[in-house]
Image (cartoon, rainbow, N blue to C red; front, side, top):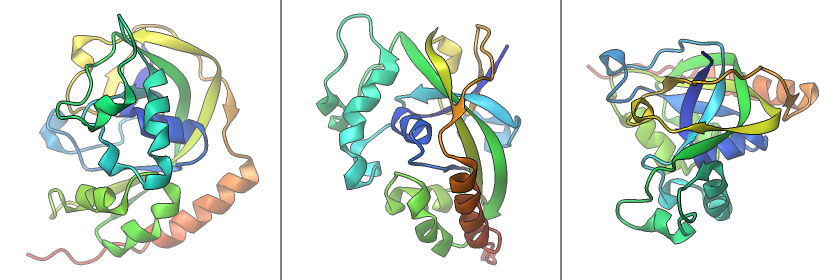
Length: 210
């Protein structure tokens, strides 16, 4: 069965549009040992609405929150975008749309908070939210994962299964999907951005206080 990587719907959309080139991970409460591991080098991008909040996205991308609802299929009507700013968020959809897949182009471990701000051109979250990802489990470094993303020719919908819920990064999809499609950035654009990310992240390991 093909493997998918869970990420906020707004982030999946940004990756598929070439507006985001990386993701940040330390691990969720349902990860093995509560630590994140890069278990696969290519995978489909699975949009989730768990914990997605408008105050974690940069102002310029807040309008995309409403459009990100297009990544889900609800049994009745699509929830209003304003539900994303209300307590409790929105209910999980019955199905989600898979529009893209990604391969790991590079990965780094960082502990230096200055790198979070320097990397901000390559993600759509607020720097405050990104810094919180670094601050969680301070003694452990943060994974910076550079993704080469591809849009698949025809988006498909997959059923949201109970085992997909919760704070886990990796899930298995119960349908065959080919790794086909067009890269969202040209080779030249991606190589240039990757070099800039490497220059920031490769030396961003600071001593962690005891």
